[in-house]
Amino acid sequence: MVEFRRAQVGTLIQRLLEQPEFVIAVFGPRQTGKTTAVLQAISAMEQEHRYEPMEPSYSRADLLPFQLADKPTPLGARPYALDASIDAPAGSQPDVRHLVEVWQHCRRQAMRSPRGFVLVLDEIQRIAGWSEAVKGLWDVDRRERCPLHVVILGSAPLLMQQGLRESLTGRFEPIHFRHWSFAEMSEAFDFSLDEYIYFGGYPGAAARISDPERWGEYVRSALIEPAIERDVLSMTRVDKPELFKRLFDLGARYSGQQVSYNKLLGHLQEAGNTTTLTRYLGLLTQVGMIAGLPKQTNRPASPKAPTPKLNVLNTALMSAVCGYSFDEARADRSHWGRLTESSVGAHLLNAASPRTEVRYWRDREHEVDFVLQRGPHLVGIEVKSGKAPVVTKGLDEFKNRFQPVDTIVVGDAGVPLHEFLALPPDHWFDSP
Image 1 (cartoon, rainbow, N blue to C red):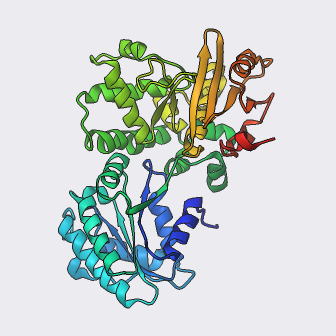
Image 2: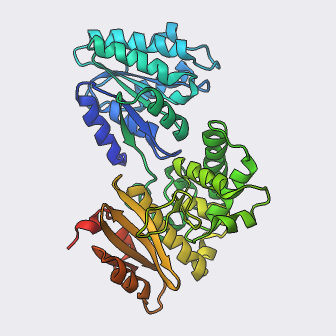
Image 3: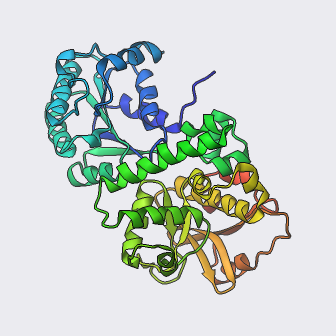
């Protein structure tokens, strides 16, 4: 079986073939294939390399069989013979001193090698003060013109982003990982469209879909809980952790719906305010869980908009929280409609270019599910998942008021869903 590779693997290989000008920063939500992609890229390179996980659960003996035997090196690449003298003691937490020693060791190897050297630092956010250390070491490398490529990655998006902004501005080039698309899950795991709508795009959960109980437990314990506890609550200040957890639960249940912050507060048992909820929803977006889409308006958007439209960034989160089985979800037309709409929203949010914003529009009885905005240009999108005759009053009114580039119906009466999910959102600005 041919090994599946995400597009980012090719981007990584291209960056590693260039002269090192920036730290390569790989980040994104949990279990989107970051470490796998980096290992695939370095296994295809001629440079020697060292993969260094910055967490205590690994030992050098555990890594050697994987690095030397399990990963083929089609271009003749080989991992550097690891020096046990600079390994962190088994079971201990690596610290800045260990990071510096590993880096300096790889620096010497890079200066001797005709092809340079690649150092991969995984879970780097576990090192206290990592960003300042990387800044100092990288600046020395640039002064000495050292041909050492450095790739950093981690499973805590908030802490990674903070360190990059505070210490490494101008010194790093990001490679973003988003949730897996329908095309990727279909090619890698033979997912059908309905399976993708319900089970979403987590590759680690794909092998478990034949056992719904096992799948749901995996998503809750290996994805949702670590993302909340480790990636948010242990990494940033959250004064009301129970309120934060409850907001995630409600956000997943209400995905595809417009819900005012005041209504959300009415469902939450712990007291809070709209400012707190706005911040917490922003944190959920940063770790790739739930987004709050702002309303399209001719006026400047307020960061405290009272009625966001909630949308999970991976429909697996919605299915795991709501408790419907796959068959039950498909039988309930209302729930399946929200799942389908959420899958479209997740696709738009994950795949849109940085210059494209995703919104929604509603005015009294008129509504458009999603609005794409790129500069002054707009595209209106309505999702129709049922067999009922298509009514487009919302799109018609939106067209009259905003003169969009295009309006699109996604579903049986318009662009088929599988085709829509295969196209980047920016395609609709340029389509004839």
